[in-house]
Image (cartoon, rainbow, N blue to C red; front, side, top):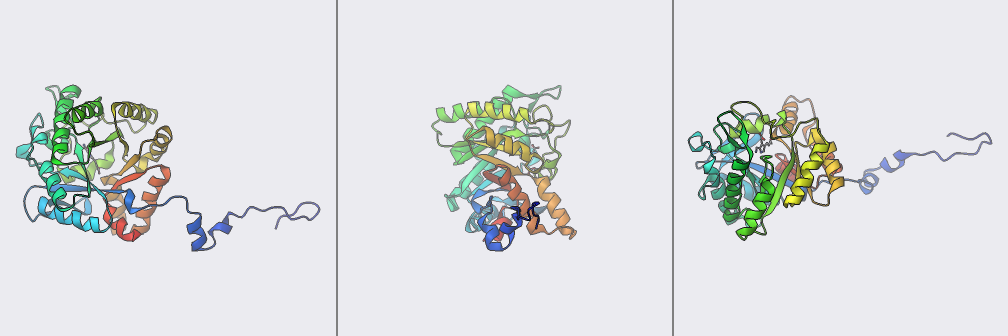
Length: 333
Ligand code: PBG
């Protein structure tokens, strides 16, 4: 014990005092992960009785609508409140203008209705973007020079969002990063009476290599070039705040950062700059890294998953989109 020159004991800080027992540690725990924070992304495909594992995403599947209904019912029992839908569109239905994206009887539209039939209380979030519908795998309409056209794309995104709202989606989530799409979608949904359909805006979406496995799942990798003229440069943080300010002004209800793990600083910055809920997308590549190392026996999977998702909450995320959602729900039970 340190002492001063008179032999008096000095106050000696001992942070370990509060780490002594599990009960004490629980009492001073600052961040809590809850099943209510989780949004479960799901891949839907055409057909019946189909459940196909995605090679780069072990234990994640593409489901046909009937089996997806069952999966939604299963995870609802685990306490998961919200799902995010991503469609696998057959090559024959893809076209330059992404027309299938607003087909009232399209895959996403049918899936939303099917989920609402069995589990009306589950929040259904639909992705608004053209990449699953584009023969080029880009999030927008492509001109002859290979450029991604902003304003013509927005016209299609608006139709897509409206068709999702009409099908019964609770939240639409534009993930395309075109300028001005949040405002255009909000205006159109209000004009059509869908005031209550919320917008979860992917405001800080980075041009990331962590999306690789997702593009395998949807067969949506860009056929040429990359997404750097619309998705953000991983080196930029202040630009994320600019995107956030624009999306808030245009009517976003929830703000999203994507990916999550390499962008915890962005989550923290956005959280400080807004009062809106902040979501983080624990993307496919982040999932694949953990699954791959766990399969090798190199890490303790469960603990790493919880530590990773807790870091996102600690950084400021209110909501986490994660393919781990059902596993985590079980762990938290
Ligand atoms: C595209 C979209 C992507 C993801 C969600 N929506 C991929 C991309 O931008 O190329 C990625 C999700 C993930 O990696 O888990 N609109």
